[in-house]
Image 1: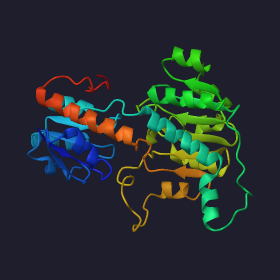
Image 2: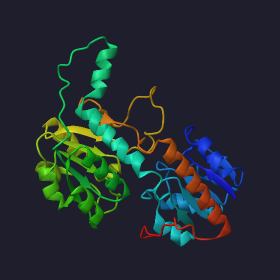
Image 3: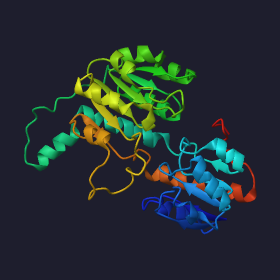
Image 4: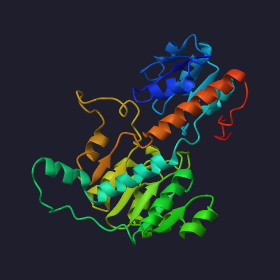
Length: 334
């Protein structure tokens, strides 16, 4: 099957090639899928896209004109795809539902530890031959209350790890996981109670109309003074401007993110020679208690292997016209 792969990154090429094993004709492009670049898919039946690609209604209409019948996502999230328009055009969409919840959860833990123990600052000091410990005081995770919003596969791994640290764990989700309650003593509660009682809050839920800006001025006002806020899920879950105000007043004592609402066209690319045009993230970068990584939580060998293998499997199913079990419809379900 002829497939155009948009936003191909150097780190994933060998994994895709190995998983494909020359079965499908893959045209790997570094270019992002946009209204202007959609024509590059001409001649293919399928396109594969990443989180920063544009699969809005207008782009999908163009892809349909060029003969595209399928979209293979190399991600679990699909909020960048207009599923309603895809359905109207008869374009099938399949995702990678789970590539490694451990990769994401472990990265979230890394952000927590790095912020708490001020590892970036400490490392920079040592390289400057400054071995002073002043200003590097952290806190014990043991005994702290951590709020996990979203206890799906990734949130459940977070719970397991944090339980090992000796944390008290609060959780908020539409569906309560009985195993987490039984094994780790998780206490399910509402979002307001979680915000009021948690020393650390970590987000692990999808971006939907109802979860958009879940963390805004009001929930922040309820949080403990000096709270740590972590987001490795979706940038749009957080009102970044409200967080900046929280940082300025020291209501938020630590902020760690691997995702950003306006990351499209920014993350995954080298802008070291450019003038940064995004004033919001530029302001975030001025805080010494903010740690930003550019959507790399998934970046482990295990996750890249699973993403590539599932993507090729989805291509196999498209070609054979069978349901992979990974297809999503306008309701976001299989």
